[in-house]
Image (tube, rainbow, N blue to C red; front, side, top):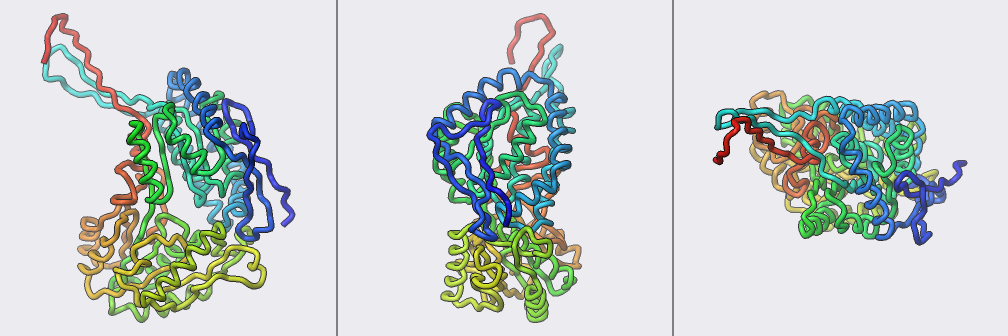
Length: 493
């Protein structure tokens, strides 16, 4: 493909350095595995030690920098992201496969995040309130937590690190970004932008490597005060257990089994567009992807016909090609996982209406491509209706009523995103009230997020904290209550 491989390094205490062992790993283009995108350090506990030490040292002075001054550096990151948007988008597309249009949106999310949290530098509001005693003043203030380990996934390699890093930094914390081993080059370019923006050494650090090695070393490290993790619910549970044993604060954003309900009174064309992009954008590799379509029986046949027609027209291709709508799966093992789930669905009685297989011919033969797939005759107890597939596979489930649709949507261990298409305002508000999810869309797909609103889920999709918006400030700050007694006399209450 004509691109020279990149050599990535860790960024620790203001210096670009290899792993102490000298060991490296490789990142390849999922659209064509023959293309080596980058080599990067295989970091170990000793490298994590160095990053934590740099963070702890820098925290002493960084926490005392006025928040508006911290915010100016974050704003500068936003400007630089804008200047290098196309460069980043191309790299994202090469490294993890998403189409260029989506990659540009990924970077734009980082830009929006920077400008939003730069504004929070002049807020970070506490509260003043009354005291139960005379001549006494009471208030609350936010204070930083300390050293934050940010463990991010590959599917949004700019947006999600920015969601974590920017609120952490504006609140006065120091950070170590541990990116996915699938996207080391994108993470390196992102941290180069933070470096260019002028953050003092040790405030922003980058640690490459495997999750079970570099990531686990950070999670277990006694010098880390907070872990922000995005990934599977299974891994999140392990991370949470370690953090509980060491009394670390932890923010978890995890798996989803999201559903879109289409009622008999819905605008079917609108619901169709939502289903297409909810299920198949990023090749279904989103925690908030639409993996279940809960269809009222009165419209199921017509809607299914329309859905098949639209899926047939989707252009699967190399991520960096301008005409591509659906890109590759991130790697070979994940491709096999998706294929295995389709076979499980067949054995359990589901019917493959379209797709269902790995693409092995033409210009895509050297990549990890899976056909956009529709499974029919799915029942709520099937594994494909309950477990996260994380691929371009959507399950059709028929219902006879609004109440049944809500019950089936909620019948899952997860609760990240949800959607209902209906023209009935009463049903819409009942859905808002009764759906068990952190996000509910009315007449919109399950995907999408705005940086000034909280993002996260319930049940096994999260642990009570939220990313984005002012809710993220509660992740990255501690509340301190302050009393000022100006009575001049000794008293207690």
